[in-house]
Image (tube, rainbow, N blue to C red; front, side):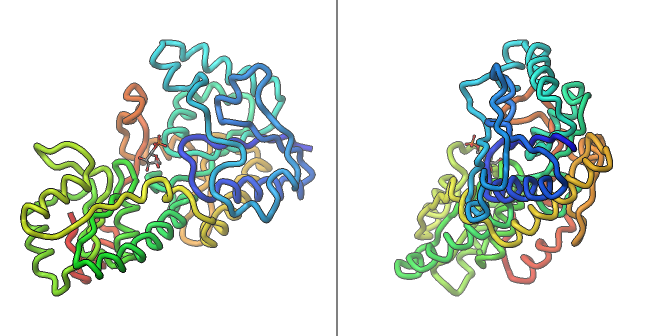
Length: 356
Ligand code: F6P
């Protein structure tokens, strides 16, 4: 009988409870014991580690659709990678993590995280040397290389779509344009996908250079006096500071285009998990459990077409664009961005969407 644990790290998103529920379900079906680590690596820094044993009632099936993580994602009061690096205590921190995991005598750890967590896990891989480490990708940013989807992305697109559907009604009543700012950090996939879903007339993403005058000309050329301009939080405008949506809104106002800004903010990380994310969570949980059964380690589950496969963590790290993490510059994380051949860019062009 195997003994495994699951933990959720990084920013939350919808789908975490589904993946927890499905991992427990699949593990119990194999006759394994499952533990939940509370608050990610913070939980491992507690003495004793903050861990609970999980059964089918811990995250009941009717609650598996809810956003957030039943296991929590970390508490900034505790020791974490950021603080350990800032205070030069990385060695001590890694030892704390390793000792906690060793005491739990686990066969495997399922780490549900983002590109930061996976990069850190790979760079500090000695922490996980005595067990099988299997990572499941989740993030609304969809900025993880080598997978066709991350858990939480589709629900975030749904949330933004529902939000903009409502915004468009008030926009029409008042003959106004709305500049809607999405999350996504420095990856524009969330803005691009949700922009196409809502029928935005312009989508600005960090990966593509834009020209404000061209944007204004484009908006003025549209035979409608209202609509959505989707702006990713990662865009910059030379010589300007502040929130990207505000910067664009000021330019539109100066050009005589009536507009308002809208910030859906954290609702992008919430909402009942979309069916596609639940199916993805079930596929990834199954793939992770199979990987554990096959004694794989340092791997990430990845969606390839309709199938879920495992990819080695070193491949994940090497495949992305390795850059300094905005929150922890001392750490280099592996990132994915909109590719120039993304089919949605062509769709945007055909639909007369200004892409920048
Ligand atoms: O990485 C997920 C994400 O929601 C980003 O899109 C956003 O920039 C960031 O997290 C917000 O982080 P925090 O929860 O620290 O405000």
